[in-house]
Amino acid sequence: MAAATIDAPFEVYRFDPAKDPSPRYQRYSLSLPPHTPVLTALLKIRAELDPSLTLRYSCRSAICGSCAMLVNSKSRLACQTQIGPEIARHGRIVVDPMRNLPVLRDLVTEMRPFWSNYRRIEPHLIVDPERPMPVDKPTTMTPEQVARFEETPRCIACAACYSACPAVEADPAFPGPMALAKLYRFVVDPRDAATKQRLVKIQPGGLWLCLRCHLCTEACPKGVRPSERIMDLKELALQAQGATEAGSRHALAFKDNIRERGILNELRLVRQTSGYGGILAQLPQGIRLVRKKPEIRKTPKEIQGREEVEKLYEILDPEEHS
Ligand code: FES
Image (cartoon, rainbow, N blue to C red; front, side):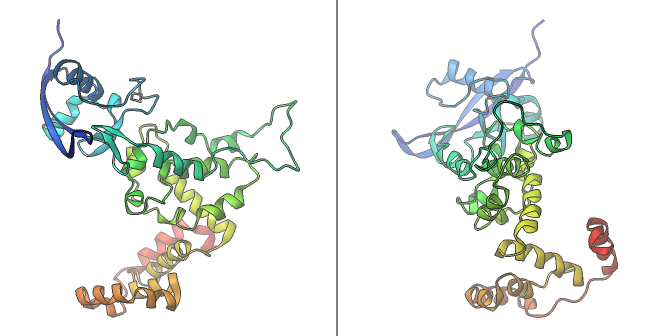
């Protein structure tokens, strides 16, 4: 018996700079079983309706990481995303190339920015030349040491996290979630001899730009949870170097600020993060902000029930209160 099919309206991003510099959406209608992967549907479109459709794929099994794209605005692997739930939720399937990477043609993006950011973290063990690893016997690690980085090797470098990341969108110099998750993997590896240098090097314009939105973790098809690895890196960077960067000072000032009154004092936050020089540098922006939001000039009143906030701090950071 043939599997039941559903109507699957597709709107696919089309762009061919050699023919037309303006991108457009092309509609296709298919009738397919609901469990059909989006990638299979796109290949059917290419085979039967439009041989000019360009996309990248290889394994069709969520292993190679080639088929990442936007499906209804979410960064997904097309081979892992079934059409049925998408149509049930959105009524159609809109397919776009990944964000934060230049589009070469249709659904194919230029991956060089992603890989050059990855290379910046020196993704290999750095061994102390004074203490080279023995070649004649295996290096052993405890199960606890291995457990610290068991999630990151699952990464298939599909760039779905990079595409989902608003920090990359705001500043292409931000290394991106995948590169930072891989950095964490080397930072906690007991065989690596460059832990502190890695943490010092990644901070300016890097680590602290992460907004903690967790969109990378939501997008990751392999459960690597890059945002949590980035938070771990921030903690390790503070331990290694203290709050010497604007980013780390901002994080600590934010924490103290909320704790004190249960609400953010934005003017004080700028001073604690960047000093009086920072206030001067941000004066034009500050004036615009005060014009729009005059109440910002007043020191905010302590919120009702601030003790509850204090209790949260005690739960989250028991050592600081012991
Ligand atoms: S085609 Fe390999 S991950 Fe989708």
